[in-house]
Length: 164
Image (cartoon, rainbow, N blue to C red; front, side, top):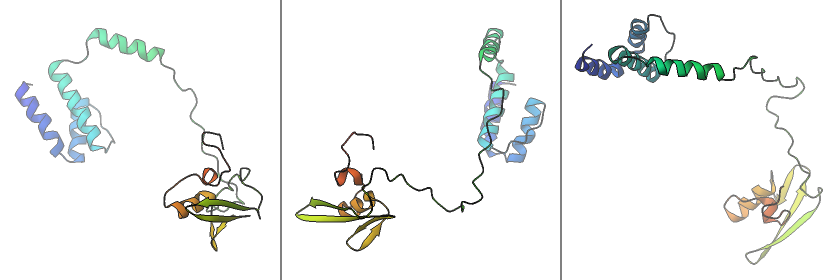
């Protein structure tokens, strides 16, 4: 195949349909493919056409590739299947958040902010601020400041850089 003809054939590959690319793949590689990924098919066919026209890997490169493949760690067992959810847990239920870092329910947190004293009551399920219930201290801090920040830091329950 001449260089000009190869260039034209490579330029025509993106205009082919998936079916036509599969047919061209079978011609180039001598075996069919079930692949339907157009960019992948184009790259593989282009590589094969160039390798046939200009020569593939050198014998030295082939030997090195075989050496590397022999040294590669091969997975001998398949990955574990994901564990099924417990039958008693409804699919939409979210896991309970770890509340160890929060004070006990009923505690009132006070914090001065822009000339006001903010009061937040810790509930069994969330936090109450100005008559509204929020899911977390961070949600309260966002409602107050208008931007996301750590509720624990905002209300002084954690130090910056300390693990929570």
